[in-house]
Image 1 (cartoon, rainbow, N blue to C red):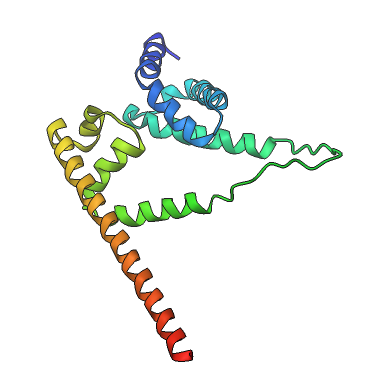
Image 2 (cartoon, rainbow, N blue to C red):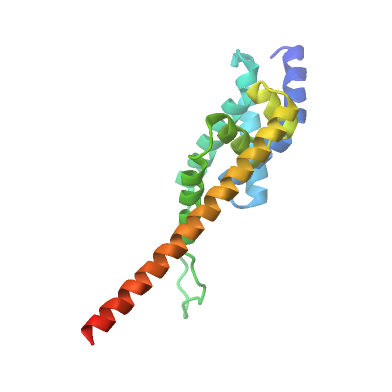
Length: 185
């Protein structure tokens, strides 16, 4: 790799390392493993840096390398079971509530206009700054702020509406049960 490309890669890593580490943290639960994942992905990308023609796609390329690396690690892991006298009393969360929250979030995001949804995802999911979001979407920082404000207000309104609908349905079901009990008596 030419000296200029090495400097370009170093500058890229310096400016994007925080965002890339956040992406790695989403892929693996342990912060130390996330740092290892990012370092491995950067080492692999370094050797291919001159092959990335459009450097604006470097983040996407690195994220793909991190995903592939994490998959390799997962496949190579050793599942070691150690027999013990007593079973551990650890409770295991099944993740049902987390999946329900995620499904609700994805459903509620559907009520937003595409521009609003993009701003919310980039600001809150990808944790981009206002300026980064503005650059990614080709709009001013002020437009990002106002769009985000309106989008979050719309999301709050939708969640409140759904909560009211759920309470009304619950009350109706309770009324039906009482009516059935009265008729049976």
